[in-house]
Length: 150
Image 1: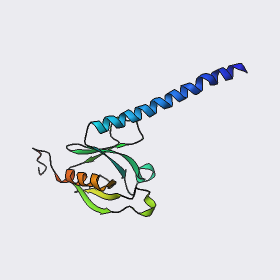
Image 2 (image 1 turned 120 degrees about the vertical axis):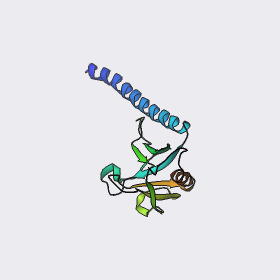
Image 3 (image 1 turned 180 degrees about the vertical axis):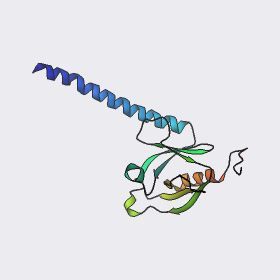
């Protein structure tokens, strides 16, 4: 009977230490993403998709020259979960959040599609007004030397 108690004395602290390490890694990841610049908080979903992809998820978007990378808030993955190509990106609509969507009141939902459609699914992102202004500026601008017509 003494052996199971000895085992529990080591298992519980080991599990607590592992959980603390995961939490610290997630906090460190968030700080690194925000310090690099060009990262803002936003919600993302793929309308019409089932499961987690069809539900609103909070995360960080980081602006790049040709992609918008989306990182989930509660993850330790170093790479973006979704990359939204800037080429052909079209803001096809904006709306306030619907009552059942459980989004903050000061957000605007933006529906995104791409010219030509292809195999890219439509995406919705939700941001506050200040973040939305920056996002729309990013969509409308082009990096120097970019020839997207060819």
